[in-house]
Length: 270
Ligand SMILES: Cc1cc2nc3c(=O)[nH]c(=O)nc-3n(C[C@H](O)[C@H](O)[C@H](O)COP(=O)(O)OP(=O)(O)OC[C@H]3O[C@@H](n4cnc5c(N)ncnc54)[C@H](O)[C@@H]3O)c2cc1C
Ligand code: FES
Image (cartoon, rainbow, N blue to C red):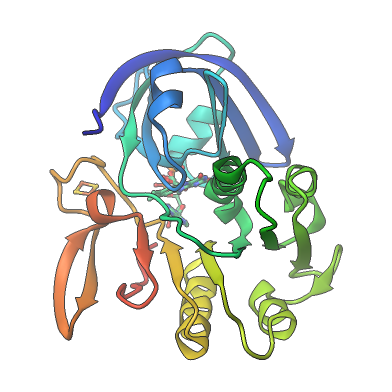
């Protein structure tokens, strides 16, 4: 049984790999030991005057007893986090939610749009670690972003031996256009032995969902619904899930954020 840890942690380092995008590294041995790919943490800065609800962020990487969060500045919460300094205290809740599930697949395909890369790098590193390079399994990564500057994780995926396919909205790197178009072109024809994981904007997830359903590929989608508590208490993150012809409403923070592509109904939440 996984324990949810509430703790106060000091920022180990805060860097900015791209304009408006930040990486917080925490020294968090217990969290790092328990974290699974696709899970998230709720983070709240502690040394501020304004009342602020915690914000959800995927676990981006686990490096020994260190844990990384990668985020883009969007509004008040992320703006405050970006202005923090090394040593500043954060309240951290986690690891939360149900992450990606792996099986006997011969190939793992990752589809990341923008900040959707955050949970998928951890997924790739964890998956590779499961068989420690002993089995001849293939990792294929489709990485999409608005611009070249916002393409993150290229080197890390390359180090994992991934076959990389890249697209940017403005064509500044890789193919110009949506990453889903590239996905469908590269993976044309019959696809077997594959498991696909995706995280990114709503439109991208919908497109991936339609495509995996049509192709009969087992797919999992990680949703970035807005959340206030992350614990199942506020009911602010509900989404519909269809199982065996029955629709039920579930908390994304507890039953997700990762869902089976055949079951989840993707709403416009943000
Ligand atoms: C499980 C989970 C994991 C997440 N992982 C990451 C991550 O690894 N990296 C990361 O950068 N973000 C991630 N997010 C999104 C992140 O939580 C939000 O960007 C953040 O809460 C925004 O807070 P804010 O106070 O800065 O913005 P707010 O003031 O709350 O909102 C400012 C603007 O940002 C928009 N916005 C808010 N939330 C989202 C969202 N989820 N998606 C798109 N636009 C949004 C709002 O519509 C508004 O226009 C994740 C969300 C969830 C639920
Ligand atoms: S965020 Fe409060 S119930 Fe899910």
